Amino acid sequence: MVIYSYDRVTNEYINSSTADQDPKIAGNYLLPAFSTPIPPPPEISGYARCFLNGKWMQIPDYRGQTVYNTTTAQPLVISELGEIPDDYVATQPPLSSGVYIWKENAWTEDFLQQKERLIKTIQEIMDAKANKYSFDTILSAVSYSNSTIEQFKIQGQAFLKWRDDVWVYCYSILDGYEHGTGDTTTEEKFLANLPAFPLDSK
Image 1 (spheres, one colour):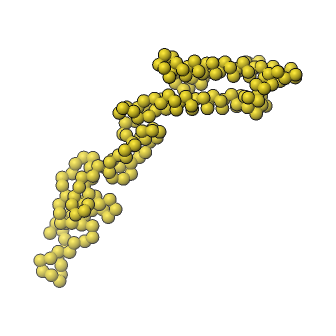
Image 2 (cartoon, rainbow, N blue to C red; image 1 turned 90 degrees about the horizontal axis):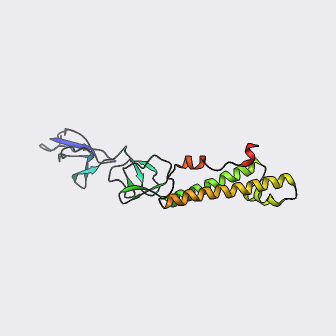
């Protein structure tokens, strides 16, 4: 009698073999654990033949494939049999630096998330520049624009003007980008074109 073995964890078909006869009962055969005399169905590409609840079933097999979260676009390598999780898709998001979400069966740039990230990045850039001139933050640097000490006053006024120039530039780009009327530049180009800090050139 031919028997069909299946994996003890995934229940997927492994191979066929011949069952041993029962030495105590003539005409009977020994059926090892995780095997069945029921033959599996033909193999179908993209599916695994699994023995579940007493019958063979074709289970989708995406193992090893990379899918992407529809909210965060983060990749996940499938490691188990079954359908792709509801909040993942097989379509890879664009490779640009934008922030994307899955909407209406396509990756769509999520401007709100990108805007929040860019604003946070710009704030960090300005604070780092202030740190370079021994100020705690850009806010601290700007507070010295009316200092009675000339050196601090010069630096404070330079930071004040630079901060205003940076935000004017940023929001002109971001607002145009949000409404489809401006430059849809990459994040790298966006940050590279920030106004220069005037004292760096002196």
